Length: 370
Image 1 (cartoon, helix red, strand yellow):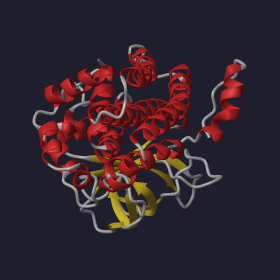
Image 2 (image 1 turned 30 degrees about the vertical axis):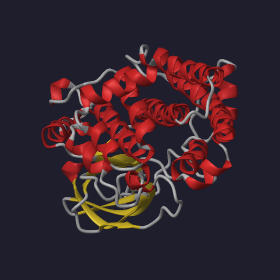
Image 3 (image 1 turned 30 degrees about the horizontal axis):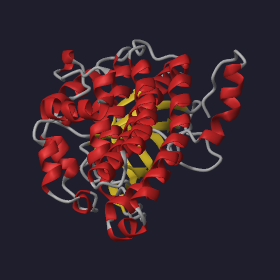
Image 4 (image 1 turned 180 degrees about the vertical axis):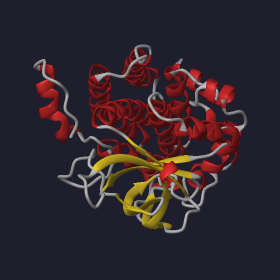
């Protein structure tokens, strides 16, 4: 069973974490000051997807999906936070293929010192491209002054490093795209409350404000347009894959919990698992063809994600009907999961924004991200 495999993956790659998550109730795990992110870090989660050549475990994509499924089933907030770290690692490793070496050194440090990495690569602003950074870097002496805000930014409190796409604005040349690598302890890095929803609080999705943060030349990587677009494609493949796995895991956990409480009969349980397993197997097929992330890979994972948005909503509604109103009202677990599943629709890129680009792609034109 896929959920069983997911839990086994947690035991294998994050020893002790599942027991810690089970040691306190769901509400405490998901609370604003929950320790789940630090537990993930302490159990070795930071190095899971880092390649062995940098000192990491180098999980396969499918192993990474199973870990996210298991985390989603046990702690939705942790799954979202962990997924952001793993997405950041994937982006750094893609950049390391063509860089001068800074990313390689950082990846080695991440694996050796269990550093947690967050990302400021896209901003959820209506009618603005998620590929156009709102964070500005201006040359200053032997470095750059970086100013801007990323909200929401998961892992805001516990992150050690922030990777941020920036728009460099020189005085005498055209602006260009770059990636800044910023230590959380740098002067001018501030975290402000942003997440007011009563779910996913433990993911630490707050506002990270960069107020004239000095970044030396050595910590800012220039990225040419072609490489930047390819890095974005690869990054989005990983982001969509891990995010989809996280929400799929949440609904696996919901079905499992409802079954344990005797709220689902065998027929209802099997019907739910068939729908969830179909989605998981689609993700598995994608992971086995991820040696090179291309537009085809991205279109496949987006199709899987958008399909599962509908499937997970349907399964959640069907299970909640069987759970009943008293359990929904009296148990924070059920009401929290029901609300959380809707957040799946809001992760970039939203389905409505990609309909025209996907229509062009299905008409044998290039897939253009928005």
